[in-house]
Image (cartoon, rainbow, N blue to C red; front, side):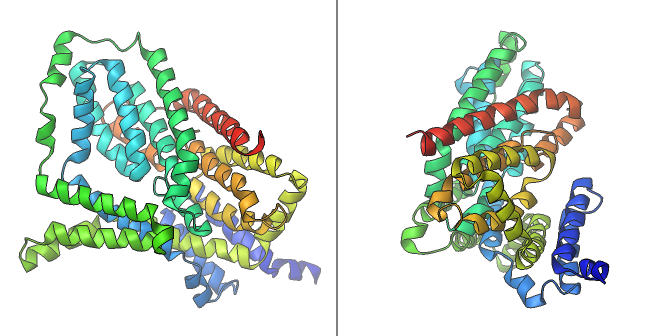
Length: 442
């Protein structure tokens, strides 16, 4: 009888479904959206959730923010802005290989703070190959730096990395909250990383004046294929970022601001077209939304809510409080280290989605929301920086590895670890010192 009660225990059933879901996600045997949607369906079929509870569990602010920004970025990309910035920057440093490394690393970090990482690397990597071919130097250090910079740079803002979107939506944090708190440590870490790479590779990256001249002859402005679209895109991006900054004062959710910006830019993008062509262009932009990611998030919200409803996450939170002996400082550094380690091995999105309700259950024991903020920032820094820990730690890593292999410059898993592990440890160490000085030193 006890065995039967154990098997029918809601906590055991919910935990088993989540464990199996994460196992399949890690093995990549199924598409990640299909995996989470199947797990969510099992939560309903097993009686853990009702259908209405499952749908209410979906955080539509996060979903709206993702869709809105994906549309805005897809349209802006059509103007050629991002390629122009990369080539213009390379010419400003006279096509010097180390200068080029500084430019590409910095541009990748800045773009990743305002675009999603995958979009950033898809824009930057082709330009990288184009310029390294002209300079006749290996693209390997540039690709490594772009991987690391994309994951570090994306940590600086609310919209830069999905874990931040999840945390920001769950805690009602503003764009400014992330920018003020995390941008300083992101800038410092990026600076140290670029400085280290420049020092390590300064002798290996040598080229001729003739090769440099080939870069200087490139017409950066030729990449701006639609000036009108560029102005429209910059205008809408300015409005959206301003909206994010003022979100608390105007009492409008970030998801609404992003969708409004996307709708405005779609209207501007198609305003001069005839009805049939306008509808085609609108559908084309909607097709560029990463619907796999959207449905992955939807399923994930339902699955994690199953753990929350059955009390599993509250139980884990209580055990964690015991582990930390009620020490906020100890909790902060444990979360920072665990987040980085786990995020280097598995996708940081499901990890963060699971941690959020668990940490919420701990807030009362550790002094409330305000007192717990160092722990929340540690979760963000650990999860985002931990993406640098392995080749499968973040989507941007996998994308760059695939593009590199196609160009005949494969990035091997073990070879990548020789660089990624030290980078991850260094960035987490810098984060730990930053959090200590900001919250615990004085």
